[in-house]
Every structure is written in C-alpha cells, then in structure tokens.
Image (cartoon, rainbow, N blue to C red; front, side, top):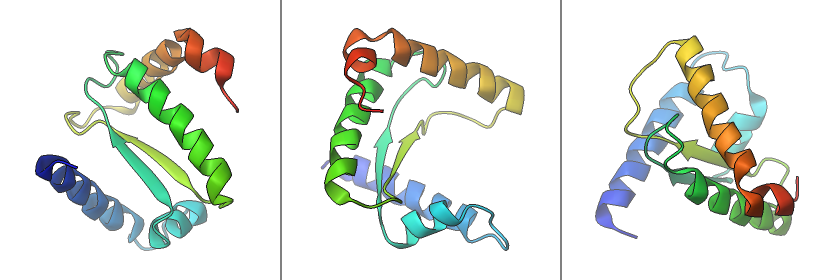
Length: 115
C-alpha cells in the first residue's frame, strides 16, 4: 500500500474515532465495528459525479464476499470521498442518489449483487 494511501486512511480513522467518541453517539453497530476494527475502508474521487462508480461497484462486490467469510454481523464498508468538502443535507442527498443510480446502472453489479 502506498505511503500516501496509508496516510489518508489514518486520517480517516482518526476522524471516525472523533465522530464515534462523541458523548451518546447513537449507533451501537458503528461503535462495535470501529472498536473491533471490523470494517473495510475504500476511498473514491468525485462524490456525486459518478466518476468512481465502477471502482465502487467492484469494491462492494469484494466486500460482499469478505462479509460472508468474516461471519461478523458488524463488518462494515466505508466509502470515503476525501476530496469532498462539507455540504448541506440536501446537496449530500442529491449526490448520494446520483452515486446510487450510477451503481444500479452497472450491469455487473446489479445482476450479480448478493444483497
């Protein structure tokens, strides 16, 4: 793994730790996954532009296979777009739906999805 990639992943883990360490954080599954290091992180570019949708689809298929192997109910997939700045909830939802629509349009992903 490249040094730059390791650096980005460490920054992501630090930020996730800060988020999950907030008093009364509501998602017990997220806490369990993070504290047991039971997750997979992948980074992508251009949230909402769909430029990374092929890579995301491929990574999700790999994650699904890994999920079956782990037998862990808390094994989590994090798709992180580190180049994305803060945005409104409405903008986030719009970009998220663009990404989900792009995923659904990939024949390999939609026809082979184990979900």
